[in-house]
Length: 212
Image 1 (spheres, one colour):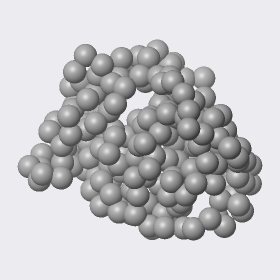
Image 2: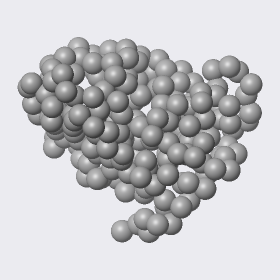
Image 3: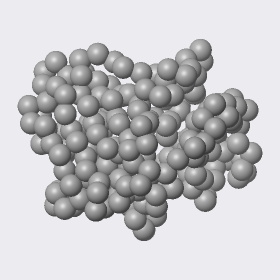
């Protein structure tokens, strides 16, 4: 088992002081305080759950008219898209022009039909991780429930077989190893949010921490 306290402390420290990999880039596509990289760094809590396309399911539940439980075949049967977007990690690296393949999140929402009282979601991962978002954040066309990136299936280290991608938020909101999307009426902070990370996580406003 990993040393959770050490891993968490290390990641917060990186977010505060910056990751020095790559070289500074003044391009306006890169938010303040970020550095461009090209090697898609891996950064997580050090645990890779044992989930494959054979045992993966995506549950969509809570305040919805139609609860879903999609297996790999049902997921692949949905409309597949490619979306190119930029990816910004709270530890201060950004990678541009990442070509994610998968299903638009709003297409899955359309199947589930959130109730009028649904305002927020909690994203659940197979490793026990959670993060929160307002429901409206999943409606943008660039929000992808992704199975591939950079021309290849997502590796387990990068959240495969399926992760969420929310380009307009720091990457901790893009939950790896996505297991479930839970809809509810009130906001419920997730793993990093209760540990001092900003609830909104807008990279253009440098919303890294709750006291920013």
